[in-house]
Amino acid sequence: MKKDSSNILPYDFYQRSNVLEVAKDLLGKVLCTAFEGDLCKGRIIEVEAYNGKNDKACHANKGRRTARTEIMYKEGGCGYVYLCYGIHHLFNVVTNTKNNADAVLIRALQPIVGMDVMTKRLKSNNKKLTNGPGILSKSMAITTQHTGIFLGQPPIWIEEGDVIVNTDIVETTRIGVGYAEEDALLPWRFYMKDNPWVSKK
DNA sequence: CGGCTGATTCGCT
DNA sequence: GCGAATCAGCCGC
Image (tube, rainbow, N blue to C red; front, side, top):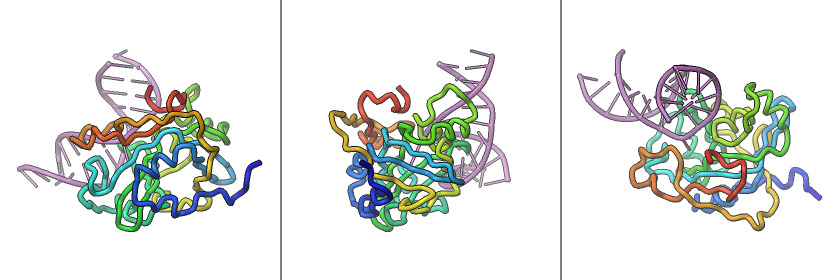
């Protein structure tokens, strides 16, 4: 039997100091959005960790602050959404405490609720709805205007998922961060082994 | 201020 | 398998 709203993740889940731990724990959790009455839910299948000022792949590397990255310095539990390649809205979860600019990029979901709405939002057909960071944001209707909002209530929140059993977690390098020199080699991408919703192949 | 690059995706040469 | 779409941030002039 499912519980109701009480299974929304508490903020102390996000505010732990080890972003790798939070990233792995987010696998299997359920990302939810509710815009204009359209409820959508997706199980988190794939994530990447970004470790604030010590990570050359992170926008907040060396403590950089701009209007965009300012969100990552907030306390854990809010969303950081930014525009990539001028087109795609990428959704991250801010972790750690205030002024520790860590974040977890949500890279892929397994749709659970609202596939019809997602399909309508994408316009283009015969594609998977949520197997990449840009496309999942589009399916869930998340945009840069939602950056900075907290994830404890509608329109965007994250719920407990089923307990993960008999599923291996693959740890490997992050995607598209070749510019990060030695940090590009860190095994900070996590996904469920053999899950068909993982991005790329 | 111009030019380049990117945590990507889609469509077609 | 390559390039366009198209914008925020950074660096050099």
